Image 1 (cartoon, chains in turn brown, yellow):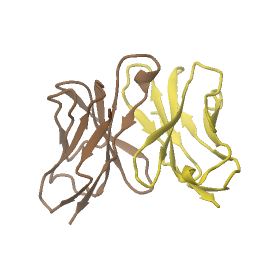
Image 2: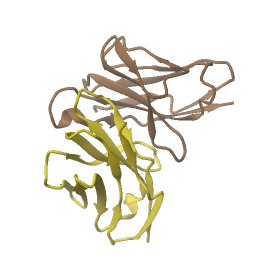
Image 3: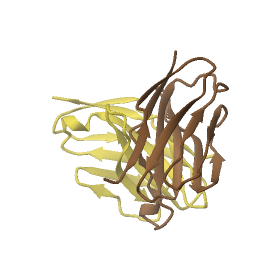
Length: 116
Length: 115
């Protein structure tokens, strides 16, 4: 089945540790996104990538890094510089073609990250 | 900067009744897209309905419909014949068309469906 797969579903990070959240899609979408969701807030954009080997910072990129070496993969690394990383992380993707379908993003099931 | 506001943190509706969730937005662009996403307890975001700003006709998807008032910058979601499975967080989102890839989300409305 086509879709967006995020792993792991739950992740625990120790202080000072880097962790990587995986996001894989088999929808042949060009653009991919990472959002962070905190209680009582909407989704905030961390990074997005329109094509392979290119990505841009979103509104809250500090303390995070990404790579886009393959079209189907967009991993997010939460570095030790991110002081408050406990949150729910959502990966999303969209095609860049088509006036109608090209403007809808589709989401993975999300990953919970907790600092211990 | 564009903003999306959902002023109702929580709403309740009796099963089989109708409920309307509010969303307002601020933009200087004339062409854009608006969306409603549902986030059930599983936390996966699911597209409910979308609207292109250039279309005057309100979008409908089965029991879900929108009231799009472009001049008022309002985009409300109406759920008819509410079902227990409709209980979720609902997020309103905006996306421009002028080369931006950013989607702006509201803070969400939690909908409770009472049996």
